Structure formats: structure tokens, C-alpha cells
View 1: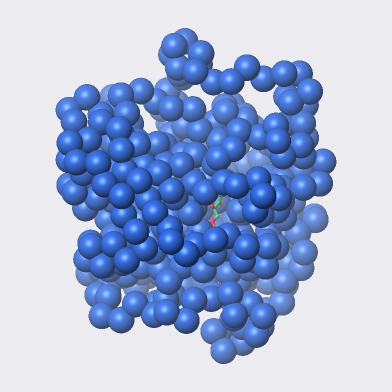
View 2: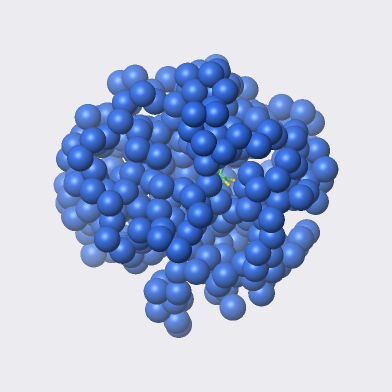
Length: 332
Ligand code: MTE
């Protein structure tokens, strides 16, 4: 069973008070944007291209030409037993609500301004840091890790990420002993981010998109910061230049385009958990036996294995998405 930690009353107080109108806008947003049942019938159909060479030229332009040579392959997370999902599928089937409410945001996301990017690391640490783009690709030894990825909407993929374990950054900033949680804040500028559109009142959503981990989760060897994918720098639609990859949790925990990392002594409110705490728990570990209130999590559909999500191949969901080595983190 997933252990859901309910916020203490003093944590709830720190959340903004929600007006009734805002609440209904949010309900409509949730129904329209992340509802797998509805989404399965409304997702645009996708073509069947499989190899990098087949990528449509407009899409190819969005993929960084900058490769990351010399990055070693992880000896542990080799993906030898996994079928990597083609980039032609993963790079145009995305969730990035800052840039739209459908999966088809790859073009809209190109307005994300990544030049002069800075990531501030602050809060309960002995060494606050600000990393620039160069630091992100040179300061910590990079490696390639092939991980399963499982979205809470019950679709899944297998992705070769390039990046570094989160524990390398923890070591660099040296958290204080009272740091218990870490908040990851992502880029948001209403001038650049149109939001999900449709019925949603974008202004009512709890921007910026934030996520959080317990510090012991962040220190687990599997917890990863990605700066690249498929051998090159991250494209904007995947959350350039820095995103979280937590393979045993649902994909919404993997905040994209991070600008700030804060070590804190309390569990902070996060984007999805603020919108619908009963649907998007803080812990959000992949678990086939805990259904989402609106759909089962027992099975998952493999991205791009058919002409339409409704006919994608299905397979059983694995506890912790197959990463059972994290189980000791959740033994009380
Ligand atoms: N990060 C930000 N900033 N905004 C988002 O909307 N969506 C999350 C997560 N990170 C999201 C985000 C969700 S719901 C998923 S499933 C993954 O990103 C999707 O990652 P991908 O589009 O790179 O596959």
C-alpha cells in the first residue's frame, strides 16, 4: 500500500484560499486535461514512425543538435531487458501544461526561453549555489540511464536519459540536519506560457508548477536530474534544460524546466496535490493496487505501439514501476 501522508493543519494553512469559482475552474481543468478516460477518445492520432530518421523535419528541428559526447552508460540502469520508445513518439506526446492542455505541445513549447538559464539552490543548506547552463552539463559527471516512465494517466514509455544522480547535487550543497523536504520550482511567465487553454481559467491554477520529494527519496540512487535524452540535450518539450526523473513515481512528480531547488523543514504544497489531493497524492508511487479515483492503475499502455492510444499495447503495471529497491523508503 502507498502511504499517503496527509498534511498537518499548519501545512494546509500555507495554501492559498480557493474561491468557489476557482474551484470549479480547477475541477473542469482536471476533467479535461488529465482524465485518461476522456483523453483516450480525444488524443490526436499519431503516425507510426519508429526510428530517428523518420522524424518529421519540423519536429527534428526542435531536437537539440548538441550531443553530449563521452557520457558513459550506467552499468546498472542499462535497459537491456527494455524496449526503448522511439524519440519520434516521446518528443511529440508530452504533458507540459504551461504550453497547452493537449499532448501536442511540442511546437508551443519552443517559446520557452532557455538561454542564460539559472538554477538557484537555496534554503536549509550550508552552501547555497546558482548553477548556469554550463555547470549543469559539466559540474557533475554525466551518465546515461535507461528508465521506465509511467504517467498517472496509465501510459508508459522507456527513455534513455542523460544526467546525474540527485545525490551529487545534495553533496554539493550540503543540506542542514533539519532539511526534510525539497521543493522544485519550474519556469513560469504568463507572457510566455499560455497555459492549458480550453475551459481552464489559467490564472486560477497554482502556478508555477512545483513538485517536492522527501530528502531521503531525493538521496536514493535512482533519483535523477536529466539534462539530455537520446544522446543530446533535452528538447524544450521534455523540460529543458533541467528536469527531474523519479522512475518509481508517477510522471507528474518529474517537474520540467526547473529554476529553483529549496531544502526545507516542512512538506510544501505542490501543483497537482493542491489542485486535487485525493487524486494526486504527495507520494505518488506507482502501484497497480491503488486505483486513481477515476481509473484503474492495474495496466499501462505503451506509448506509440499503435496508431491510436486506444489500441496501444497493454501490460501489467509493476509496483514501484519495477524499481523494488526503493521499498525500504516506505517501511514505517
Ligand atoms: N512539469 C511542468 N513544469 N509542467 C507540466 O505540466 N507535467 C508532468 C511532468 N512535469 C508537467 C511537468 C506530467 S503530468 C508528466 S506525465 C511528465 O512531465 C511528462 O513528461 P514528458 O512530456 O517529457 O514525457
